[in-house]
Length: 305
Ligand code: PAF
Image 1 (spheres, rainbow, N blue to C red):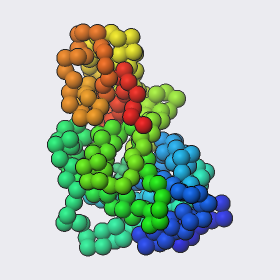
Image 2: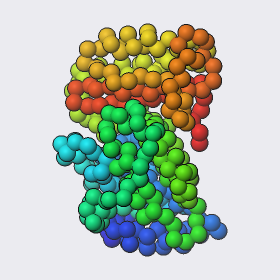
Image 3: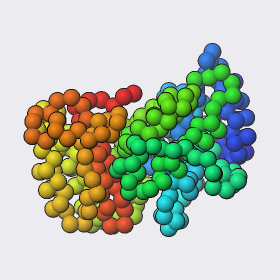
């Protein structure tokens, strides 16, 4: 276990994590203390700071994890290329007031090698990111299940875990796993953080050239247009938005869909040419240069807390 005087304590084993969580919860001086977990893969940015700050505001003890999970990468090269910035990550987490950071090795997380028994993400994962990245969501849910168990308070406490709204399908699947399999944790969704130019923050944005980044701004522009039409109860007319996306030659659109926020089922006809009412989620994914970008915006309704 290690910790700089002002930074968070770093633990690398599940046993140390459990012990440190219990100690901090006992020291919390609250009748029913609370623990907030922020799972990450590192390469942290202001979006992660938003997760950590939300966890800090709502809990007595805040734990973050940093683990680049090999199970959720299909392409070995993508895993190798994933940025690793541990020192800067610990500094950011320290600034957000995180108490404890769990930084396990792959051997600690998967002592027997790749696990034979995994969480199966089911039909919700058949489309969108799941279709583009086969096996990704099984790997993601498997590691999230392990992290939720690893940080599960061993003393009586409230327990919440924080995830970004930017990864909308991931969030829906985690909520579904927690409810279908009775995990004793509350899932808290935290709003997407955007750069000043509107691009949703992502650890992969650093791989965009200046021209690609400029082209990528068509994604948030497209979503904003849909959001404004929904707010004015106009027809969403996604075809006009598709034309706008097609005009950006550095951007190859994978999908733009208007879906039910809970089931991710396409809401085909409520939205095309009749005035928009109700509540939906617009999800988008595109390849821009070497990077696959995803984003989404809620139409006509708030995210569930
Ligand atoms: O969103 C991420 O960073 C990852 O998918 C998560 C939830 C930390 C699991 O590895």
